[in-house]
Each structure stands twice: as structure tokens, then as C-alpha cells.
Length: 111
Image (cartoon, rainbow, N blue to C red):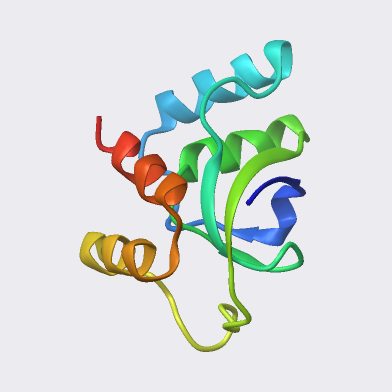
């Protein structure tokens, strides 16, 4: 299900790894808003774990805009019990719980 979400409700997958990419995304979002594919996340609209789009998520926070999210809905408590730590975790999780749209979105991240 695709929805718009507040950035504070989404836990990024990891920290910012490419500062130049981050700065360019912030500048783009401040002038053009969100452009491109949605973030893939798992959880609820109140608390979700990002599976893709870490730099885009941080940039959207900085630009103070909501983000489009393809949400794999589940009641797992991401804040206490689980963190996606590897590429294998991410792929297996999406294949097990996601829709075809979610799987295609994850595959598009690797392009």
C-alpha cells in the first residue's frame, strides 16, 4: 500500500554514508519536493522501519517534507525487537511479507 508519511515515523536503515549525495538531495527537495520512487518500509503508519531510501529519508527530514512510502504493514515492534542489518535480511523480509510492488521497488534500488 502506498501512502504519504511523516519522516519522524520512519526509522532509517542506517546513517548517512554519502554526504555529497545527501546535500544534493536536500537541495533538490527544497526546490522541487519529492521526485522519484517511494521509500519501501515495513511496520505501521505510526512506526515503520525503512528498507530503502536512507539518504532520501534524511534529506526529506531536512527539507521538512512528507514522503511517499510503499508500506508493508505488520505489527512487529521495530523499536525494541528487530533491526534489518544485512542485504539478505532486507531481501528475505520483502520476499516473505511484501507484495509484487514491494519486491519490484527493492530491486529498483539496486539499479
